[in-house]
Amino acid sequence: MIDRSQFDAEDFLVDSTFQQFCAGTDKLCVEYWEKYISAHPEQAKVIAESKRLYFILSGNKRPLNNQLELLKQNFDTEKKNFKLNRNYNWLKIAAAIFLVASIGFLYENYKTKKDILVASVAQTFSTKSGERKKITLSDGSTVLLNAKSSISISATFNETNREVILNGEAYFDVVHNKDKPFKVHTNEFNINVLGTAFNVRAYSDEISSEATLIRGLITMEAVNGNGGTITLKPSQKVTFYKNVIVEEKKKVLKPAKISPEITINHYTLIKDSTIVETAWTQNRIEIYDQDFDEIQGVLEKWFNVKIKFADPEIEKYRFTATFSQESIEQVLSALQKVENFKYEIKGNQVIISK
Image (tube, rainbow, N blue to C red; front, side, top):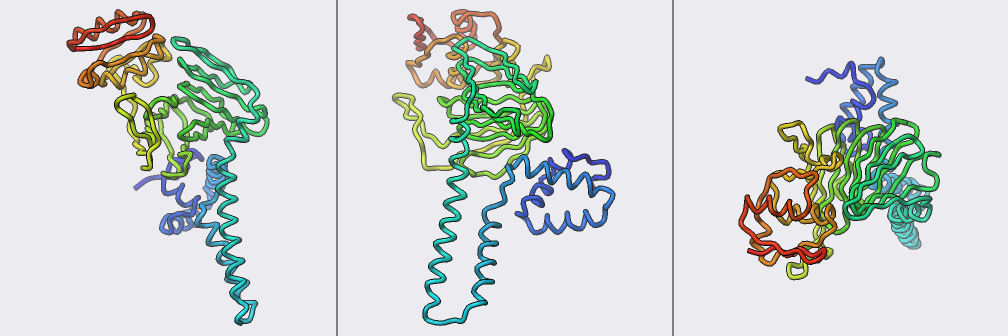
C-alpha cells in the first residue's frame, strides 16, 4: 500500500490515478480521491496545490466529453421548460447546431494556438550541421541546441508564461517557477514543464520524435490529441513514431492515415554512466546496438554529409560505438571493422556499398 502522508504537490501529480481524478475521466478514481481527501484533511492544502498545478500543466483544458455532457444537461433543463408540441423540432435543430459550433470552436481554438505563438515569435536561434549552441533565456533557463536545429522564443516569454517552439534537438535545463509554466511546442507533441532537465529530439525529417527526462517532472500530449496526457518520471523516455510511411525508393516521408504509435521506456545508460540520449551534449556520438539507417541521420547532421546506401541490406547492419573528435572518414573506417562494407566520399556525398 502506498503511503501518501509525506507526498508533496509533485508526488501527487505523477500519480496516474490522481491525474484521472483531476481530469474527471475515471469514476472509480474520482470516488477514491474524494474519499481520500475527506479522510486526510491535513493534506487538503497540498492536494489543492497539486490540482492547481495539474490544470496549469494541462492548459486548463477540461475533457471534451465533460463539456458536451454539461451542454447536454443544460439543454435537457431547457427542454423541461417548454411544452411538447409539433413546433419543438426547431429546438432540437438549434441545439444540434449549438453543439457542433461549440465543438468546432474548441477544436479551432486548440488548432490555432501554435499559429498564434508563431506569429508572436520575438527571436529565433538556429544551428548548422556540425554546430551546437548554448542559449540562456531571460528567466535563467538554458538551452543547448544540437546540429541543424532551431528554437523560437515567444515575444511575451517570461511575462505570464514561458513558451518556445523547437524544430530539431535541444537539451533544456529549466528554472523552477510554478506561476509561469515552461512549454515546448514541437510538430508532434507539446511539453509542459515546472522546473526540470530534459532532452527533446524532434526533427521534421525523421520518422520518430522523443523526449527524455533527466530530472524533475514534465507532462506531454500529442498535437493531434491522441494518447491523452503523459506524465514522465526521471529516467523515462517517450517516443512518438510519426503517422508517416517511408517511400523506399526515394526515402521520402509521407503522411499516413494511421495514428502514431507512442512508447515509454527508460533512457539507455551505458557502463561509464553516460546517458546515450544526451551524450551529444558532451560532444560525443554514442551508438548503442543500432541499425545503420538509425544512425544515418545522426551522422549526416553531425558531419554535414548526405549518406546514401547502395544496398538496402547494409541499412540493417548493427553497431555499438563511441566517437568524439573523429572525422567522418575515421568513423566509417571504425565501423568497417564491425561490418564489411565499402564507402566513397565525394564532397559532402557519402555512398556506402557492399
